[in-house]
Amino acid sequence: MAKADRAATMSRLHSAARLARTALAARLLAHGFYAGQDQIMLALDREDGQTPGTLAERLGVRPPTITKTINRLQAQGFLDKRASNSDARQAHIFLTDLGREAIHAIEKSVKKTEKQALKGLDKKEQKTLFKLLARIEANLSDGETELAEDEAEDVAEPVVETAA
Image (cartoon, rainbow, N blue to C red):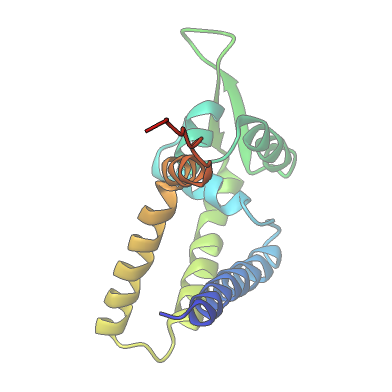
């Protein structure tokens, strides 16, 4: 693929991701949620009582980000923070009744956004898209290793001249 075509493909990928995030954010905002809060809520719906550290690791975000978002969701009445029975220094995060009620609205917002994004794609095309995006994710998740290798290759090795 030509360099211009690769750039156009990456531009489309960025644009599609941005538009999907924007569409979901608008739907979530109608229910009182900001971008990213839905992921914490859904993670707690799957497994209530996780620690902030566990949530951060599972969602691939930094702990300070999770703490800030948890505090906002707690202030909104969606979450409750409780000290661990075994270690008072450790907190566990739980959905409140209001939080549990909000899960349906979050799931509905996600499904509507998925439906909008995938409109016009048949099952086979959706499966192909999934495989291609999974491959891109795998390529990029190895990025740190590849970046280090690329940088090492870019460093010119000194030329040692020997007398013949």
